[in-house]
Length: 197
Image 1 (spheres, rainbow, N blue to C red):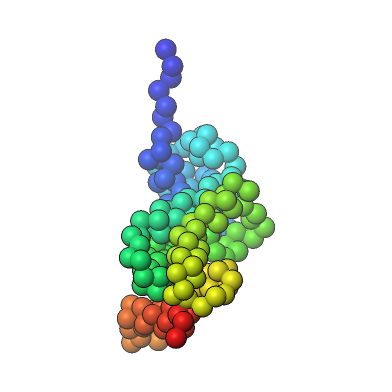
Image 2: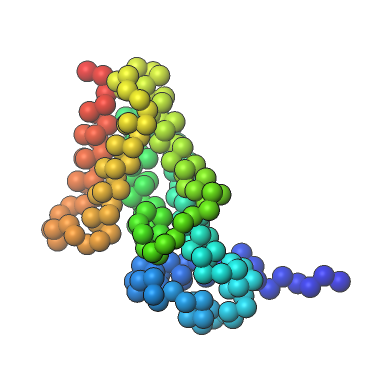
């Protein structure tokens, strides 16, 4: 008879979320496998069994952040209006960052010095932005957006949302700043800027 599996997906996700919280609140030095196991109410054996090593754990954090992000981006229904779809993707980008702020720094910053994601993890990361590129290509093909390299519009859109979200997550915006409406207004202005006049 096979042994029952004791280290399941629920534990794996709990460990990843706790590891992300430790990184985002206390920094890379706070992320030890022993502390992580204790915080999650499990053993270091479970952590090693699920991830292997600390670099493998960080790699799994990176991939999980992008997996969740990609899932949210792919859930955005297309309207057929590329500018509106671009705005909707930008809004979901922010929602995703706020929902998983503890993973955002692993995904987009050097939260763990020396960390290099595996090729598979980078593939997950790149595929998360596929909906953005598809919307931009559709807008160019339909003539709604100017005839520009799709990567130019997609990377510019990413830069706008990443910059605004990073300012928000880092708490560097003015205290009375209306983040939600200002963010959406910036997205709409950006999308209009690429439309043919």
